[in-house]
Image (tube, rainbow, N blue to C red; front, side, top):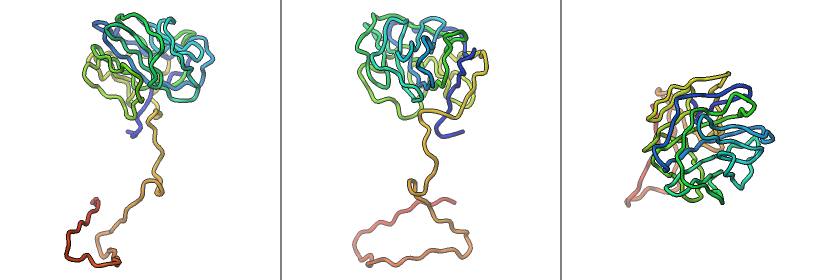
Length: 232
């Protein structure tokens, strides 16, 4: 298991994930996910379907092709997206920025991650999380810096493991079309170990190995502290 986690890769040619419809029980809900696409020139790329339609139209993030976000999506870059339903309104969030416009409150449901037709999404999707009964974001925010987990009211959570499973309360059975893959790529991918960045340690073989040092001054008779990490 890699520390940065995994994503679902869709090649844009018939790949999608289907499941029994996941629906909110009222107007208060949150759907969020991360995505990465090499192409923002396509007229429609569907994120979610089988109920409500969430998509990219060229470089614009839409729900129902009615409410759009004012910030354009860029290719070959991870983006965090969220749709939040409150008691009064529905707002979009892109990379933490709240949309300037909204829709009237409504319920939400979906049963597919992308589509298999000409509106198929090409790229990576990870950390798809649906909360039923929580409006997680109400103002602009800093996108998550760690993997999403199953917090209170998590009904659906998928596309983040080296295998495919819904870790939400719905525990949906996932059905695959095409050749959807779990790949070791995510917005939380960190650089590998570098001595200059992460430091190092000394290894002692347990026989006659030792290390000595000369202090510039004696410890004296006052308070002092000596601390270290060890592993054996």
